[in-house]
Length: 340
Image 1 (cartoon, rainbow, N blue to C red):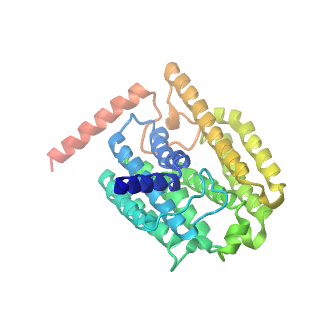
Image 2 (cartoon, rainbow, N blue to C red; image 1 turned 120 degrees about the vertical axis):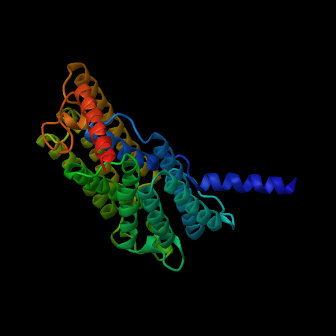
Image 3 (cartoon, helix red, strand yellow; image 1 turned 60 degrees about the vertical axis):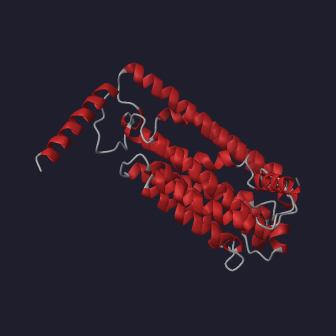
């Protein structure tokens, strides 16, 4: 009975250390990449099973990364979307196992997703392993979060759809990276004392919470500004301009947070995260509403219906005409293969 109790205790502790309340924010990133690939070319749904594999892989990647973090940090203070508990001795081993499993699952979805997961797994190890400990480095720590969360996570979801990138996709990818990097700096703002005690050289240790919040604020603002410019240029639906007040709403919160003594507490970081998610959800809702209008008006929809920035490999036609074109293209491809 004691063995069963010990196993139950281990499972409970690992679940707490994996911070399940943070997982939805991580899974949003591959979902954004997947959704963007469909929106950009106004595609009918495809790659759903592969996306499921990516989401499972990224759940394992998230858990493994946090277990390695917990094993090296052994937090005793406030934790973003979680709580500090004694760390089981086997936590790091479970972390390596979860990272390995994430690569296998992602590879079953697509080789590109598998490669992205493999790079993320390596980054997670060098980020938290005591021999490298990039998480305490002033340059390598931000770089890991930019590459792993900001670039490779959306790429994994986008890759399973199977279409090449275009200029609009590359610009949006960069803007996504800016936002994620900004969130990384915000997440460390209340950890100055703990990071300093561990000997880390994070931005909050070297320059203080106000600078960390200010840099995070600037990077997220750059993402919003870039999105606004693309909307004005017509690369995104101009209905997105209606969401501008959401950026101001977030900016006011970040400005107030920057004035808190010592970077405030974890509630400020939680509030900023929720506001970013709310802005994304409302922005998505506006796009869906506009998509519904486009469908009823029988005009080009989604990324084919913008004023500019449209992909060059698909016609800017209404959905029924695009589907007929797709069928014709597939028949043409099959005939060309049969003639070889």
